[in-house]
Image (cartoon, rainbow, N blue to C red; front, side):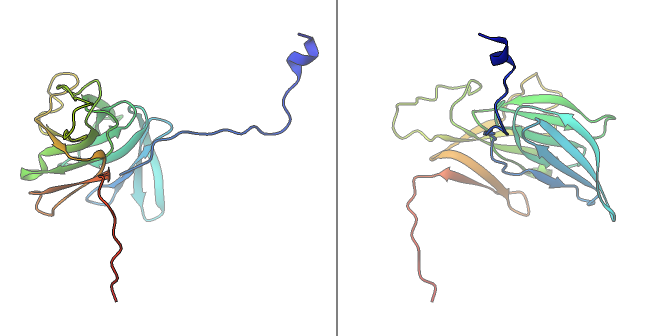
Length: 209
């Protein structure tokens, strides 16, 4: 190979495709409206902003897992729970530390997507994940008919930080569907709703007039 070949550069800008996980709950605003959390998916970080009348200012940026797609404040607003889609984990960030830092990592099923807090005093964390993955504590039986392919992992939010590395789920609920995605809770925290991206259900358009 000649020296000129080594030094030749391709003309013009090159095409680049970024494969990035889709955000599900990328923002969370504190109850007092003074702090905004934003997942920085390609950077694998949680960005913490201060909200003022003049706008937003970046206070700090905390490394979390790979491709975070959702974030939520816990009940007392002292922690941010970050869903890492590619790491199959939840990063618990202590916001009351300076600087803010990850104090626990919880392992969940494959490709987790969303998180909400519900139950008594919002003390339970609910996380959607696929019914598979290296952290699933059961045989996922991929070829058996009638097995749901969507899981909701439930953690005791009050004791998660003090638990063992990787955490321990209080319960895992299996739903009939594939690729679970968004979660929502009722105003009183007694009910949690899970949306399945590929439920297998047919869609019908009904006239309204």
